Length: 307
Ligand code: PDD
Image (cartoon, rainbow, N blue to C red; front, side):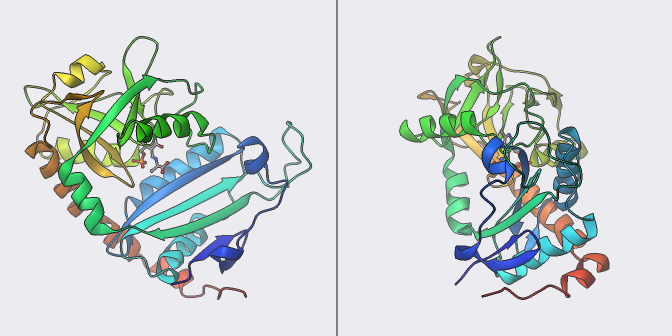
């Protein structure tokens, strides 16, 4: 099936989608992004990602490309046009196109916006989570504003590539004090021997994952002990369970770190139960959020792709 993308105000065929050669996202990584998981046709944690997008834009003084209502409608329409039941929606907003110059262009420069959609094989993703993944560790070599969801992801790309070359599913990154910050494209968690859920506190050191936040709330509401504090690789190796969270992985157990097993080297029941309740809760919330009349009214007026 042909995919449809959204670029600077138009729905276009994916293979024809293009941006200007002087888009600042391309030349300076002067852009931010968001990724929504889609389950059962609904965008998961919709509001959380919208709120973080607004924050990333504001931190970098990039203009918002349109109202939240209009953007919501386009996102919903992208799910429908691409017939996505289970998949991912990627949104990128740049400072716009301008003659190359490090200094910001004039304030009336229109931000650039692009959205893509892709289906994800639901059964394969579930099977991966059921088996768990191994991770490697590497020094965290990123910039000091990891809280901003910037497209400047080269260190993350290198870390994930190193993991892939080692046959691992992720790379956990380590700060100069020996603590895990997060993974190349997900947040890192452990479950301690006494059943406490531990993850690094939100700060400039990590991206405050939307899945992370939702899971935290869910765990607290379920009466599970939670702690936001840094942890080391040795502590993770001695933990009862470990896992990663992100919009694409949801919650995926980590069964091996640098070739050494976490506990018995199999996904723990705690992680798998948490994953199941996260998906169920987020799906239900997504369904409610997507049913807001404001979203659907505007979505129905969507344009047709241009040939
Ligand atoms: N990555 N940390 C990093 C560095 C990330 O890139 C991501 C998400 C997360 C988890 O955030 P969230 O729960 O909001 O997805 C944490 C996305 C999925 C990506 O780059 O594809």
